[in-house]
Image (spheres, rainbow, N blue to C red):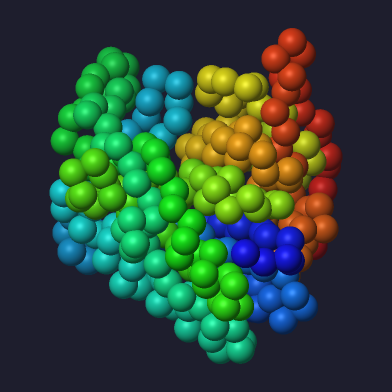
Length: 290
């Protein structure tokens, strides 16, 4: 495929994340010889477009406190429009502006990402656990790497996002962080960087200086209850990448200058899987960012 070390970068959809800065940094690294796959979400653009189209948005909170987007048929259309029609073209154009050829793909292209649609999702509503059945989301089952590998050989940056294709050959929403993890495993990536709108994993979500330089996640089950919302899913994705053989996974800040280079140099939180016989623990590193 390529002799250069491969890094999969996930650009978060939080509006605070500097997508243009991430692209500029990726372009500089590619010009220096790095091999990079860019995976993206688009939560901010999905919310904006859903508001313009009058499509109500709903979040499902599972019993283990992990939250996901409720994807009814109308929301699935919004997700596809936002990711494939708005976010992805901007990223591809931004990379091109810096002299790097890029190709935008969804998981549907070439059957790259296959998923099994969840027949029902457990969610907590008004203190009760209920089953939500009309949800077009799925769990990844298969990753085909022919397309991204061919693009990498040509010196292109693959820019990849959901949706995937389900067992009935229909589009299904999948979590972009877990897409990045699955691609990193399938491609044999050396590193996975999950860039988000926070310094990394925080010991106190209300204290941006409470960065944990290392976060140890249990080999199974939900993350620590202090990791809520999107961070919980990032930690699950990180564990899946590590379990699949990716050597280094970091959750880092996507808002500052040169965010990819900073994460490659060790910024943010390095995620590790705790040995099964040892208690889960994290080290806290206090950082004040200028």
